[in-house]
Image (cartoon, rainbow, N blue to C red; front, side, top):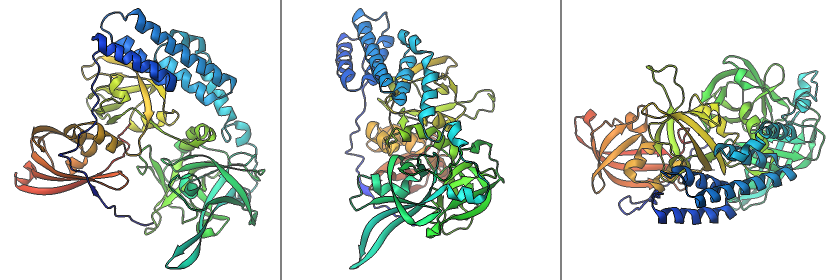
Length: 542
């Protein structure tokens, strides 16, 4: 494992002008006309977003909407219905599910015509996805550990010749994988096969697998779908699997339970190691927690199955701390089960987001209240236009209870961008709300997107955990600090005066460095020049 020190590129905050969305005043005739024109354009390019915006227009008018607005909404509904029927003809259950959810979220009267179809569509979607049917999960009977090993493969990515200092070296990436269906579908890690699908990789790349029973034969394989954010990939080889693994449920796996990892560490095929679950909630991904295990894992184990005593897959091995013993990690199998229909549909799995930032609610005075407390809303995002506000508590998404930020991400793992969802919760004043929110594509660096679309005084809250009030050019006063945030750990308090001197970003825009001059109360208001850094993605963005 190598550590990369990023080179920061200066971005002067004094000259930066964010692209801040200005809400339309729908009481003004011109604003309504402009929005209707935009909706009509979107209906041809993004019909689900057009449906949502037409719903916003109709429901945002203080009086009864004019016939023209209602007619446009009905036309948008009909457009999405037609797309549903086309998807139904094509047996595209993933698209059918997305259109039905969107119609229901805006309470389209005609959605009742499909109300009995949503569960049926989901059932068909699961039935056609390899690895999720009961028949596949029980297709192979294991008599011994050797059968489990035969269900694994060595992933072999030939990347040609690498030239270093005038010498040529064979460039091969070795990983592990396992069969989830008899017709040759295989699960592995994205980082093992990334050169096959990464548009920025320009070199030679050929993907093969090697069966555990025949390590001399390289069988061509192809990438079906991949998810860089969760480090998962689905492959297909034209072969009948010698053994098919059943996907278990790591939710029932407890700390201390015995587990086994199978793979090809440093190319040593058919290797099985054992250990226990050391922890179940390590935050290594922005979209969810992973398991920590102490089973021996090395380079080449990536993508291999983590199984329980019964041979059920409970996780996918993906990382280890090379310089430390017993610090290894696996992706919970639930993430794979939620992702499989999307991976099977083909191509890159893109995650959705609403353009918001929050945390799991912890209120000792209200132990009965669970949800996600909203700390920040990006101007112009789905949450903002949908009427979500800072201080709101989100308790349900599409009718499913959301007890915290992790559960919110879990619900979103089954959803795609370009979907309208129902969001319910509690306002800061205690009133209930129920609204429709459009899911956009989650950016690779949500924090950088927020920086581009909001004033730095407001953007500092999700970026560093402190909101600012401007008192002059690049001069501010801290108005609030989130407990446990970077600002809190750096010793900032309310009413501390600060001056932002410089803002820099890593080359990939995934980290931010801010140089400030401050007089912190906790330091006796002594002058101090301080540099603070933050990653631009975390589980708090949703």
